[in-house]
Image 1 (cartoon, one colour):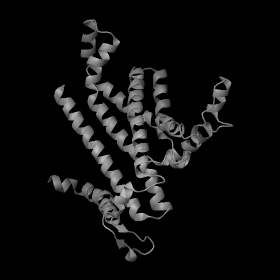
Image 2: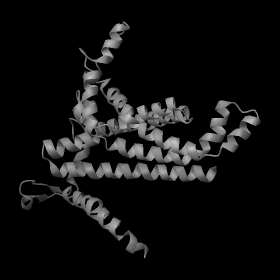
Image 3: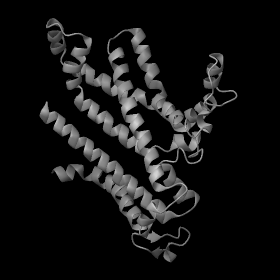
Image 4: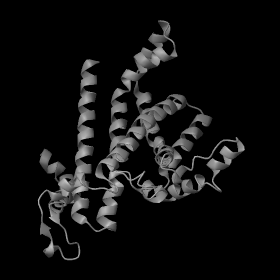
Amino acid sequence: MGWLYTAPALLIFSVFIIGPTAYTFYVSLFHWNALNTAKSKYIGLANYRSLFGSTAPSFLSSAWHSLYFSGAMVIGGTALSLAFALLLQRGGRLLGAARVAIFAPHATPVVATSLAWVWIFNPQFGLADTLLRAAHLGQPGWLQSTTWAMPSVIVYSLWHEVGFTVVLFLGGLAVISPELSEAARVDGANGWQEFWHVTWPQLRPVTLFVVIITSISSLQAFTQFYEMSQGGPVYATTTLSYLLYQEAFVFFDTGYGAALAIVLFAVTAAFTLLQRRTGDRISRSS
């Protein structure tokens, strides 16, 4: 009966996820001719071996950019989300309006807001440089700088994504036991001790979920890189997802792009599995 009830969902999952993933692996074994698939040439694992022989941009540099972006989003996003949730957990009209204001960016289209932030980071007319000039500070160049391009995209991505994870933490804070916090305060615990020893342990399942979904979404992030930096300058923001797009849809090296897609899928699955196992160990130890 269980298989019967889940059959519709399994059918949809097979058609739109399992099937395309298997076909992508199949394509990655060929020098694929997108115009005439019958002329595609089987080359085995050559596309995977060429990952480590590519130059501009290299697979390893793109992988590093993906990890850099994902690490900043996971660590910075989780910390900011939890901090905002702790500040907004109390009721009231003002805090209710603040919740809406923090969540609102997440509900906006990535394409439109990415373009808006391109203007914010504009070196001549942008708000960011206008404020820096008013404070008599230097202008870093933002999206035109190999050093600051990735941090600029990270700032935008945090602004856009933190609202969703704040809601998740607010849901977690709503169901934790208030009696334990009251007992800790009665025993003389200060605010930090109450958070670290009482509130934080009860939020670990929510935190693990936030870390997993943020890791997955960050590794697959593409739109903001396409709209804000196009992978530049000098490939400084070329991540695995953007490199995949370039190889498959700009240079039409479909087999190599499929190999990149399989590697990105494997990295995402490995991160998720590692975080799940780490969460299980934390749960058992606590």
